[in-house]
Amino acid sequence: MMKQIRIHKYFKYLVFAVILFSIGIIQSCVDDIDPVDGVEPQTAKVGEVITINLLVKIKSEALGDFDPSNLYIGFLVPRSWRATQGNNTTITYTSDLGNGRFVLLSDDVKVPNSEYPDLSYPDYLKAVYRAGNNFLDDHEWVVYKTDKQYVIRQGASVNPIITIKTKVGQQNMFTKLAYYVSYNGAGSGQGSNDNKVFLSTKCLEVTGGANEEPIDFCNKPLANASPLAASDNDFLTFDFDNDLLPTGLAGTTDIYLCAQATTADNKVITRCGGVPANQLKPLPNDEYRLVIYPRTFFGLQKDETLTRITYKIANKDGSVKVGKRGTDEAFVYRFTSCN
Image (cartoon, rainbow, N blue to C red; front, side, top):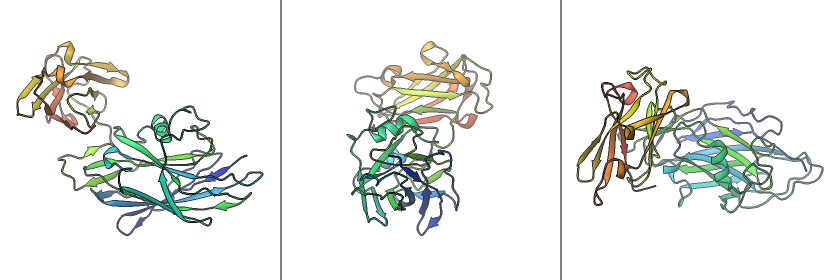
């Protein structure tokens, strides 16, 4: 049985930062998903509930009636929003076939006919589409299904309107959202005719949070440490892009970490110098990386814990040190007990 879903995407503001999207799923053309009306939201406040309306156009070109099916809706959000916890997200729909709500899809549901048949839908989307068009990955895909199954008659069309209400987290940030549509039993492999994904290229700014500097997922950083949420008992990865901005390290291939760690009792531990333990290893495209275990790297005692690391990227003799945006201002990484 062949099935075709069409989605065309449009945006416009509604009262209190309501966002209207229309997404189309097209059997023959994955690339034909474009904003056609209005703009995406540019700002939101921490703790604000934003509303996303999706107009989904479904048409059956089967030789018989559509098998009973649930529609799946997935979207990509920063992990810190905790979208699936409590009442942080509610999704409802209206359609010619009936109205109702979406419920969280169980991780026991696997993706059929895909290159990853053993993965759940959120894990599949993360494996294939990762963090969408964000440069830093601290995001998650969440997937919901309609509370009822519906039969679409041969040759019929149905155009449900889906309303997602999700609560923005408590951190200042810039992020790009993403959306996914499919249905149970669909051939949901990448590039399939029965599902589509829209990876936004526009950045949503969240303001009003307590963090001093917003987390910028949208723009490639000169240097960063990941994961964004970690304790001093987790491995940390430091990355540096020596081709992103003109800095004093241009043309240098010996790249080192120069870092100061602060403990909970305000003790400062410095690890600098052109020694192998501090050296970032070269990657393609003039990028460099160092992975450390903070407790060992900074020589912590059993009763010591770290609260933050300030760092710069340096040459071997330390005569050139590069910080934020290529300036002398150090990068800052803050530890958290939440992983």
